[in-house]
Length: 356
Image (cartoon, rainbow, N blue to C red; front, top):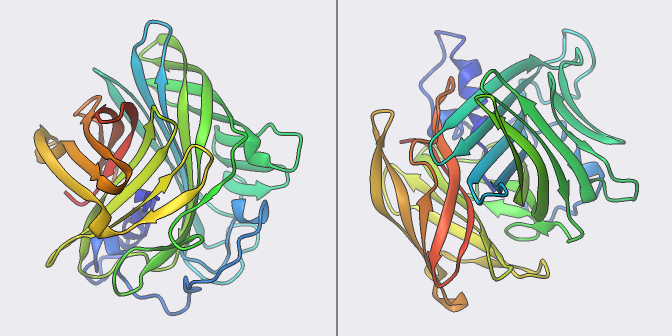
């Protein structure tokens, strides 16, 4: 999943108007939006069309994380996200009348350093966008673009971003199928029915280089792509989320999230993906997810070590942040960074925590 933090763009836009009523749910994401297209079960996904823009929906994102190592075994993480926020449900044209706002987030993390950056753009003028033939997603010079020559544009991708303190360029390759999250791509976020359409490519292998504060590293490792779109993904009672994408050394992939509530137990679910790409939805009673230790980050107590148990899959692991200080100090801040696994399974992954 990631219920992408870029959904928070809605709150940024609302903040431009002092008369805006208080937010409902985290970052205003519980606001009811009648005019936009609702997310309902039974959608039939179509590729490559669904890699592109979904007019009529309020928010969507294209999201990549990568867990990387260099030749000396040093660990790094890379994150890249492009968000589209529609201010009007109508199909948008070109030029300055276009009512679409784009937002980009990019970050790099090592055991000792974390850098994050953001970009904003208005739709309709070419500064940011997504096209499907050939696939290309960009904001300024940050880009996720296909290099494939066959029918699957995600089989071979190039990812790049640059800021004052970092830059990276990665080649992403996969021969595995896409994974539809939830109920055939209908990913529920609450017992009340809030949901998104959600699919992933968790089997990417990445290779390339990254540069941090002038030091260049040749790196490789697993990467994960998430695609999600929605119009009202949260309830008014939901305050934030904790989201995990985990690469197990045994070849399986795991996605888990819990949506925290002002009152009541969190909404908890996930997906177990076997080494061949077969996905099984995990119910709350099949998962144990609990924070173990916190670290003081940006004045907040952030849970940077977690216990993750899925007894039916013989999974009993602890996740530990590579860098507890992986704070995305952007206009709306949150925590996001690579984690390392120990216990019944080794491996690595990513954790995102919002609303703290």
